[in-house]
Length: 359
Image (cartoon, rainbow, N blue to C red; front, top):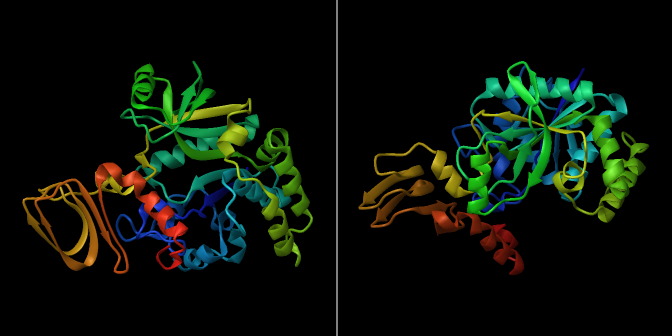
């Protein structure tokens, strides 16, 4: 059994504006510590997946940045999408490339910008998931054990019983649930059989291509039209042509919520999808006033619980609390932590105004 790491790295991270830009998105930023998010994602695969079997699905602009950060990878480690078309085309294209040489190769599909602090448990659960997916031709996902009734995540309900495999238990998925309101999320938590949807998937390349063929036949046909062109001079031109007609759809909606042989493995591994500046504040180390971030120097006058990123400036906080302040030199964000999810609305505004210089 060969394991392939597929890192989805084409997003723009609009909730992390103004640090995250089209040419410098969240996954290539050092949000925590010295390493960038994608460097951390790559490192946690060490000893589990050979570098030759790692595929980065991204776009041409971001490939240049990522290649400077992941210097051990080569040109053939990259799959370049001409346009973003959501996760089903992204995953299908990666599966097509893997299946060319190794149809039974097991894909470990990971977002490039998640935080996982318990790497040992991560590798343990991936090994169990890969073995199960290989033996059972199953679609496997990881369900994160919830510690609060979060409304920002989708949920997965595990079926009863399950199969114990090593240190982990594999359950058939009973249902998927979209992001709930607080009351529903509280009921999910109390039930004990709902888990956060991690957006991580494990399956054989041949299995996911077959499922795409059954659930998304038009996408499957479009992907198959590329098959004979892979590795040939006309591939790039054909890919552009096909992607112009591809309809964007997520793998969750297009496949996972419809397929039958779908399993979830509950796991607690210090996971966080780092979805907003508020989340960054929550999981950052704080000083005695509750402040976090990075500044040239912080002057605190009767303020508390703020996140400030302004590494080269003196920042004075006077009588404020619960703010996000991010200064990148050419742009400044100030918002309440409770409004951090709405940062993307500022990006939408700049986009409508044609202000590409700050995007």
